[in-house]
Image 1 (cartoon, rainbow, N blue to C red):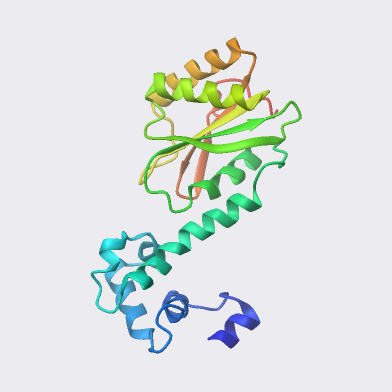
Image 2 (cartoon, rainbow, N blue to C red; image 1 turned 60 degrees about the vertical axis):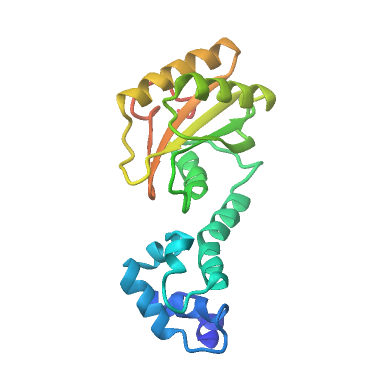
Length: 218
């Protein structure tokens, strides 16, 4: 398996092969094929395995704490890598680029999280961070935190994003109402609300492209 990985990466690996290979680094002196199959049978998919809670993984016979830690490291290290790759200094000039920039930040996140991307007047990212966990529609909280982050970053424009865990990337009436309030509050301090992106799994929807307000990428 190491030889296959060295030559072609994980390209030709079936889910049980990829999981078996990962498990080997936690259980090096044992054939991990049977455990890999058992994990997939229990949780359904490779993704479900690595996103399963630690306590559920540790209930599986053969999965100790170190093995569970290694499995849980997969989505975390993936998000860390992608966040580092798509980080400060990136220039965003379209809705598509903004969506692609934000999607990696939600890898493996099971709860609703609100992100802000602060841009300078040339649309270069000067800060991208999660500003709070919970519903973006807690308007008083979210608007205050958005304003604080934007002003402290000396942003010329911002993009807001939040996710719909286990849902679809479509705005609710509350999402629209909160977005309009954010746009008004930001405009008052001279900062543009460029877009509000809603993310669900690997899909995203732009409220600007949906016609809610004028996007500055057009």
